Image 1 (cartoon, rainbow, N blue to C red):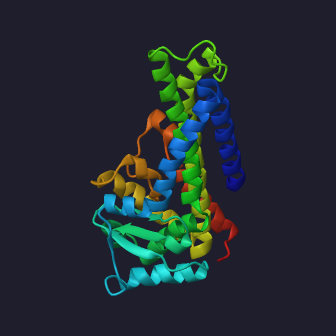
Image 2 (spheres, rainbow, N blue to C red; image 1 turned 60 degrees about the vertical axis):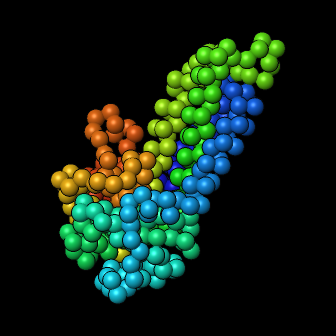
Image 3 (cartoon, rainbow, N blue to C red; image 1 turned 90 degrees about the vertical axis):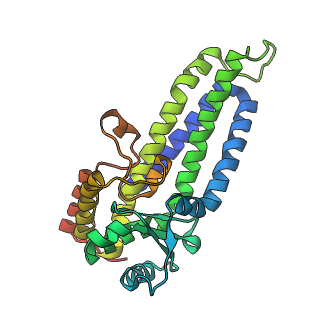
Length: 287
């Protein structure tokens, strides 16, 4: 169901981009926006692992530095038929983890000092399995596509706003769209694109939970880990990084409540736990 939902949301984001793009900037504006944001997101996709790991001060470790952590990662990678990813430690006491890399051959798993200290081995195994699920599902690529479309829409809106402030285009420019569509696009398009992008991110989290539960064979351990991480993250804030990278983490370390939940990169933790507990009741098979 979540795979279907992702496809439908990406289709909706693409349709919104094409429709509003034509209204805001015509064919020329559409092409400029997609090229500009496409280049930015391509660079992010290609070098995202290095950028985000440096942002959080993550240090690559060897097996001698953390043998138990390495064994967990290696066993799960072998079970999932994946290459062994690089392993990093983030010098933060808040418990959290993320995976990055453009494909399984260039993947990295990063965990905070706090998560290694606070979780049991079974819970940590569930967390690592979740992160490897993101790698297996090519979520970096999917979120790059979504980010490109959403970013292009925002760029188009900015172009249209400045064009209006500076006098706009001439009347004989038959390549443009309707003024009303442009006005609506400037106001609504960036918000709608962000909402769809966040909905895609939430659906990928559910999928990674399912993948992690099957890969580890223990959905209840992952559920317990999510509960602990959620609780401890509220007591121990993260000190580095940026909210722009929130979608990478297993629990959003920059979360907010109220209306901000509409723009959340993650589903409600309780909803995730309920699904994992339902998987445990049905029984899961290790893949």
